[in-house]
Length: 315
Ligand code: NDP
Image (cartoon, rainbow, N blue to C red; front, side, top):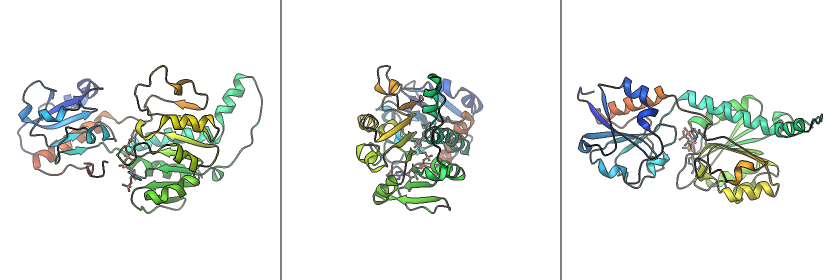
């Protein structure tokens, strides 16, 4: 890498990135000059770190070459209207993140399978009541998305004995215990065999609104949704209707169309919903720092950064 210092702008409407990444900014001091949005030197900026950037953010940086997300998803950058063609968008890929996500999702699979919501309600009533038990083999689990995180989640759930189905865009080889489905044609078949449906898709124009009445209708009656992708995957009114009609028995939701979820939102007090505030997993700050540094080196070498998303596909 050239010894010339690289200028990187911090762009976010929702997160104070200087505070969020303080430890990593300190480590990169002397190698990268981090500047705040619209504080001068716009022509020197070749790199950005972004998370939900302002709509016109990229218009101000004519020499920008790459943008790093601070998480696994890069949708808030890829969909930004001011992002010009030819600018690479890089996401953070970290095995520890997939591991953390897996633990979170497994807890919710067990919550549904072992009927813990009913035990909790019975405890509140001081009611000693044994419930009929099923083995893991009797509870098929479907996973939308078989990427860096989906593959880890699928492997861990299969190890517990659940029959696992996975759905991806392209055809993927799968090990014993995991059945693969792909493309629009594979979705209906997969949904029909998924009592528990876990969403681990990236948000793109193709996946927006995919969790809708039609999707829920194809799942077996009594099915359960674990929504850890992005809020915009879900048509919220369709979920409420599926829960209220009894077609779905419950849902665990970590991501929402509007975050933070408004206090008056129906999800908060719905008896069949368990929700968490977009906390299924977090990326370690050092992993973000390493991604920023690796991307800076690629920018200076004139190479395509590792973990750059395919902007045509949107993820
Ligand atoms: P990857 O890009 O590694 O994997 C994405 C998967 O989705 C791939 O298997 C891909 O198929 C599949 N996919 C994409 N589009 C389609 C489509 N149109 N039809 C069918 N399958 C499709 O992403 P990650 O596993 O790293 O992350 C997945 C998502 O998880 C993130 O984008 C984010 O939305 C969410 N997430 C949520 C977090 C939280 O805290 N709640 C934390 C981290 C991530 P193919 O294999 O063919 O390319």
